[in-house]
Every structure is written in structure tokens, then in C-alpha cells.
Length: 111
Ligand SMILES: [Zn+2]
Image (cartoon, rainbow, N blue to C red):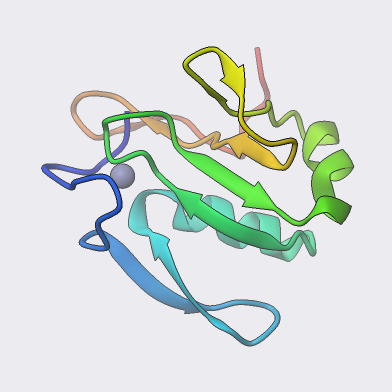
């Protein structure tokens, strides 16, 4: 779950444009902006991300060099229909409840 209401998959309705650490423009879904900024602060290069728009789990794709660090941070590989899609796509840690409140964020440890 995230904070999107009636945002379709592949839509840019809930995005903001940020400048990446490499100086490029990137559209990032509002729901996971804090998490993406946190990963950038750790020098992780994100390639693509999506909050899932309340339709599916959010995901974050990173460059191959950052796969091990993502695993160390406790990120789990992203599954779709029970299958791992690619080795560099991880489930986003940002989750919200039905009321749009953050219930589990990237800054909290797995319990
Ligand atoms: Zn969202």
C-alpha cells in the first residue's frame, strides 16, 4: 500500500522531478521520494523505481554494483507472480496503510 489514489500503473501523475547525484533529471513517485533520497545518500545508483500506486508492491532497480549493498541493507528481491524478475530489482521498504499513514519505512529495521 502507498499514498496513491487512482494513479494508474505507468502513470506519472504522482511523480516529482529530482536531480540525481549524477546530475540527471529523474521522475520519482512521491510516495518513495524519501527512500530514494536515502539510497542516493549512500551512493547507491537507482535506475528505475515505482511506488506501486496501491496496485502492486513498490520496487527500486539499482545498478549492478549496488546489489550487494542493497542486500546488506535488508532489501529483498522483488517478486512478481512468485518469480524473481531480475537480480537488481528490490522491493521498496516504504509502505502505507489504508489511511495513507506510513506504517513501515526504510528507516526502520525489519522485525
Ligand atoms: Zn504511491
